[in-house]
Image 1 (spheres, rainbow, N blue to C red):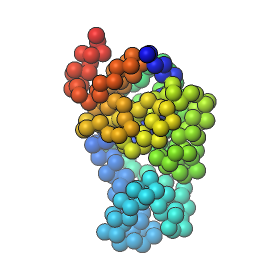
Image 2: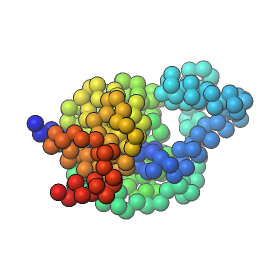
Image 3: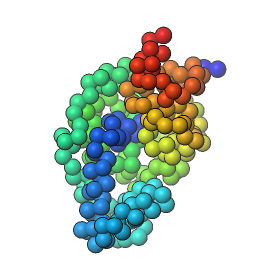
Image 4: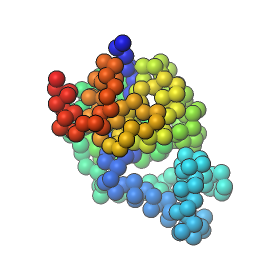
Length: 235
């Protein structure tokens, strides 16, 4: 049976750009530096806390909020104070791909709005989305908290989740989306994780994944090389 997709929710960091380009590592360094310099946690202990916070709360910010008294705005400003020119440049190919997808597209991210806006501007994608649903919109609750997916739907005009797709590089963030009816697309190249319908190596292959979903064709896209994906789409 053909499935209709009317709305896309697309993660930001590691999804709209290559997660191996160094920016995510730089963000982690900034978190470690904040924990060391602002709340005086030794560096090695900070690394362990980041892992625990991620597993327990979904983000370092949420964990720090639970265990320390901090200003979340100051934290977010500090962590995202990065020279993005070192990591990002305009992606004209991705811009053309997104422009050709006529259905509404939303950025849905655990990052703050200023960072998301700067990333999209550096990539030349700032006008390709209906809006940005950021961590402030979600009262600092991060994905994969189940409530934030309902909140994202509300902010996007309450589309039917059965007609929405979520695209994300963190597989566990797709599980709550899948549980409320979203189609799920993982940006990755390993074995298909639980709660994921399709995987593609990068966002540039999104048209192929959408074609597979809307035609009820659910062979994981990660089974193909990027060249094969373009070949499938051309058929």
